[in-house]
Length: 118
Image (cartoon, rainbow, N blue to C red):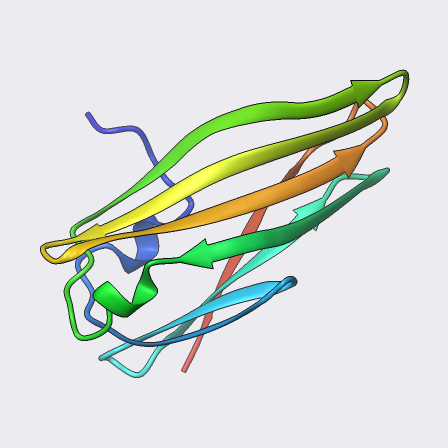
């Protein structure tokens, strides 16, 4: 069985639009739903979307699969930690890559919170 991805709710759906800034990635699908992925940090963590690239190839395409990739420690000094996590969405024409960053004190982390609306 394939590992679950936070982006699994959009797998099998046709992407028609993307809205993105540091604090939300919104994927609009052909069924009229807005799938929102919001970066969230635990207690003492700040989380944001550093980049989202390659979505031009996915517009008008069915998202075939999604993958949550590894987290990498960019910088750790004492209790200050900066990490980056990678996520990918795939269609027949290519892939989109999302980079999530989280700054924390060494004990907490960050993640995407998913919500959907009409």
